Length: 428
Image (tube, rainbow, N blue to C red; front, side, top):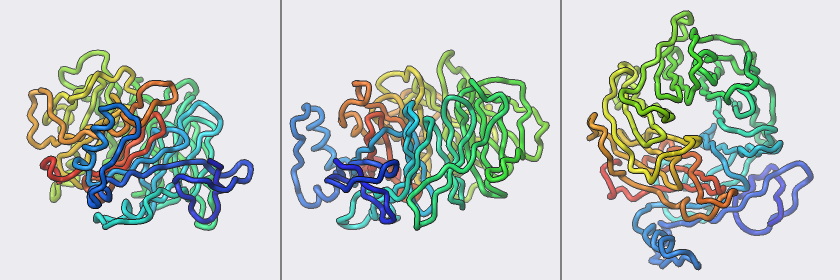
C-alpha cells in the first residue's frame, strides 16, 4: 500500500492503493471493517479464510453476539483512545522511537450517530490530521472545550502540549512542554484535564509530585502536600475542586484544590494481596444522585475488582473476582472503565486479548468470581503482535452516547468498534 498525503480532505483508514505523500507528512493506515449487522440482516454466511477452528467458530458466532462489529488495522499499536471535540477519536503510538504518530480520526457516520442507523456505505475511520511525537505516548487527554491535547510518556514525568490545527490544516503540532521538578528518571506522569475554570491538567508520577498546571501559561495552581513517594496509577478530576488519586498499590486519596496544605491521606484496599498492581476507573453517579456521588472501580493485576463510593473511600461497596484467563504479569495495560450510559456496567481489559463487561448491581462484598455479561474475543484472533506473541488488549473506552458500544485496541495494531446484542444481559 502506498502512503497517503494528509490533505485538507480527510483520508480514509481503509484498504486499497493511495497516492504517495510528500516527505515528512501524512500517515499510512489500512482497515477492514467487518459489518456483522449488515451480514446478519442480509443472511450472509461468513467464512474464515484458513483460520483455526476456534477462530472460525467465533466469526460465525459473531453474527449472533454482536449488533455491530467493525475491525480496523492501525499502522502502529496504540495504548490511548481519547474522545475529542466533535466526536473525534485520538490515538497515538507508544513505540520507543522518535516518530510516534498522534492521529485525530473522524469516525464513520454509524459511530457518530446516537442511535443505530440502517446500512451505511461509509464505514471507515478517516484521518483528519496528525503529528509526530519524539517519545512514546502512554497517556493522551483532550482539554475540554479547546483544540489542545496533553500527552505523557517515558523517559520522564514531563508533559507535552499539542494543538489540533484548524479545519484548513492537517497538522497536530507541538506547542509547548510542561517540565516537572526532579522529573528526570521518574515514572511517566498520569494525567487528567478539565476546563471548568481554565484549561488545567492534573498530573504526577508519585503521590508527592501531584500538581495542577494551567496548560497555556504553565503556571502551577495547586501542589499536593505529601511526603509519600508511592507511584501513581491514575488521577481524575471529580469536579473543578476535587481530585481523586490512585496509587499502584490500590490506595485512594481525595484532595481539595481549595485546601492545598491539607495532607493527602491514602485509603488502602482491604485484604489486598501483596505484590499486585492496581488501576482505577471513575464513573458518574446514578441519575438524580448527589453530584458528589462517584462510583470508583479498582482493578488489580490479579483480577480483583473492588467498587467504592468516593464519599467513603475506606469502605468498599462490593468486590468480585474477574473471570480472567491468568493474572496480568506486568499490569502495563490494565484498564477498567464505567459505562457512561449503562448504570452499573464496567469493562476490564489488559489480561489477554479480550475485553470483559460486567454488570455489578447485584454484587456483594464476598469477592467471589463473577460471570461476565459479555466477552469480546476479537483481538485474540487478529494475528500475532510485533513480538510474535498473542495480541494483548492495550486499551478500551466506551462510546459517550451509544450505551453498549466500545472501542478497543491491541498490541498488534488492531482497532475494534463493537456493540453486543442487548438480549445477552440486563445492561441496556
